[in-house]
Image (cartoon, rainbow, N blue to C red):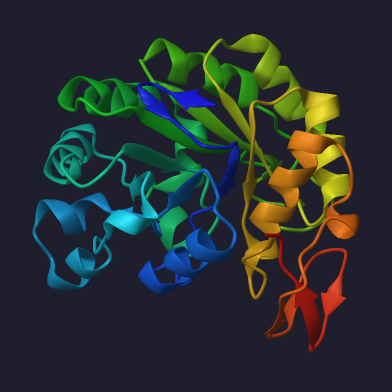
Length: 277
């Protein structure tokens, strides 16, 4: 998969997760899972703009984790563009967060709240794209209210503004992480735009990957919660995409013990896992 001028080794992507996708976590996932692209945690554009020390620590990036997408959030086009310009030298891709459902983000008009003002959303993307020379992507949800779906309209606005890719989480803001991901919204976005579309939501196994890609025809898959305690999931799913068969029969003898993690469909406790050579 190619995003702008950035060629990815594979189309399995580590999601931005606040408080989780820090430098150590990204390096572990890169070493043992080899995702084609990793994301930083979401980072405040205002924090970057005002050179906040705590914010700057989130921008600690190492060469071994590249290519990397630095995700920023905010609702001021001028500040967003200025922040993007400041981080351009360390980012392979800059991503704009328009999907975060957290109350403290939404109440400031950031994250998924921008889905209620697509004119402003488009202006932000356009200003950022014009300010930097690296590809710009946008991560969205299907809508804000529980029964809304503005994903196609938002995707068209984002593409017109010059973005090089779009990530779609098939839930609304009000749904948070409840229920099931709406694959139909991802499929409609893929059919509506020409830029790469990455599907996000409920990817916990090779069966989930097969279902999402076969149904939506999306260009890539983003993994979030399922990577907690299981950095090998990227390698397992990438093997499946390349060979269209379950990885279980093609693992090496080396074993690793991992801490428990919870997925929507699976609860995994202490046990031994094998990792692909």
